[in-house]
Amino acid sequence: MSYLSKHRWAFVVLAAVSCGSIALVAEDRPAKSPEAAEKAAKPQRSQMDSHTAACLILDNQNEVLAAQLAEQKSENKDVQAFAKMMQKDHQKFIAALEKFGGKELASRLKSDAKTAAEPDKGKPVTVVARKPIADEEAKPSVAGLPAEKMLMIKQEIADECLATMRKDLEAKSGFEFDACYVGLQIAAHMHMIDSLKVLARHTSDDLKPVLEQGRETAQMHLEAAKKLMHGLDKGHASATKKAE
Image (tube, rainbow, N blue to C red; front, side):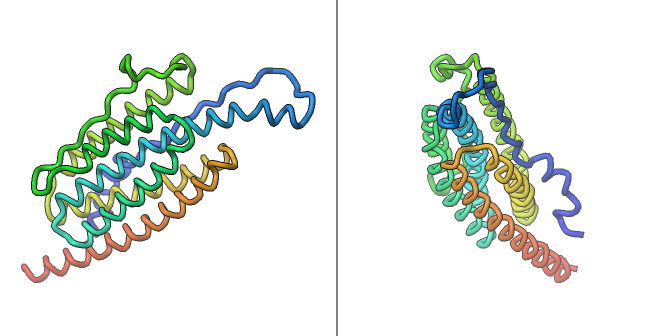
């Protein structure tokens, strides 16, 4: 039985949390024309795009930090290469999402993550916790709206997931670390693929292709992680057999 099979529950628990979104209720008044209806719908779509992008930035930021930890801690060249790819691709997705609103949050998260993701070589990895969005200086101008409240809760969830991931991975080494990290990526990307598929149904035509591209990349990451896990299991079984 593979490491992933024996510890599947742990990977499910560590999987990324879905991005909650609350739609704003439109004014109960029929539009006079299709053009008027389209004009009235734009602010709602724009706010939905901004909320969706901010939530996804949080999830992708966690992926970057997990990959940084893996690159520094793993002794397996294949795992290190996978982690480098993860950092590059998720940072690219974050940059694309930043164009769709939530600018202040996205900018602050990007700054904090850069500090955490670039430690001096040879030194222990330090994952810097995000500054709570509820702080006075970072409080959204529309914090009373349900969507903004959900975004604050979403960040708290992302921070808890990051802390759990870090605690679990830093307690492991060697094959156990590699298998845990890669197993986490399998579970997280299965979740992300489904999330992006659903979110693309509820966003604007401008954001939709960005999410679809993100889903294609997530699918590629999933296949790479599965292949890597198979190689880890095979190598570990061979090493164990030789040691007997």
